[in-house]
Image (cartoon, rainbow over all chains, first blue to last red):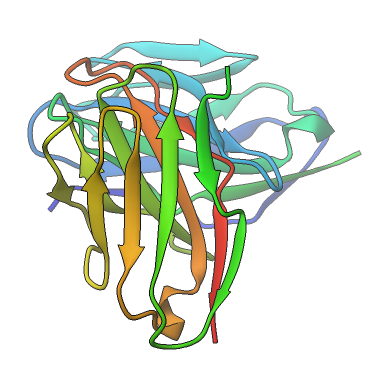
Length: 111
Length: 114
């Protein structure tokens, strides 16, 4: 069935380090791909998205490229800040409305 | 704009009790969702309603029922609560049929079943 797998956390980095959070998926059809972020005590909010193969989504210094050949959508940022500490979720959405998430990856950035 | 509003925010139930979690959105979205969030498991889809009048099972529907009352409201019912249903529940809404539209989330309901 359809599923999303993320790298296990927590990921602990020093400020200004390079970030990669891996996301791979198994999907029927042609879903759009998303990254959402959840700050403590809050609901999820959209970080970036990509709708078709080779699209690159970007926002706030974060980037991810829709790789159909490797069924991946890895999240990257060149220089993380303490304020980036949060839980990051990879997600897939189909035109039927179905929307599923990965298990989340906790990022801790230390000064 | 309130966005997506969930009630209650916290609830403690005894095993076997029933309750309904309420969700309402004011963004005129067609699609609505219920998820549960458990440590290490991420968000798992319980049920979703792609449009008013339709509901579909998600990844973990057992033990739950839903009602799409109207376009704005989508409720989740636990008929006989079990400790395994202790979780944080999130409601979300989005546009229907458009792949790249984001989902908007409520603040969550923290449910404990003792």
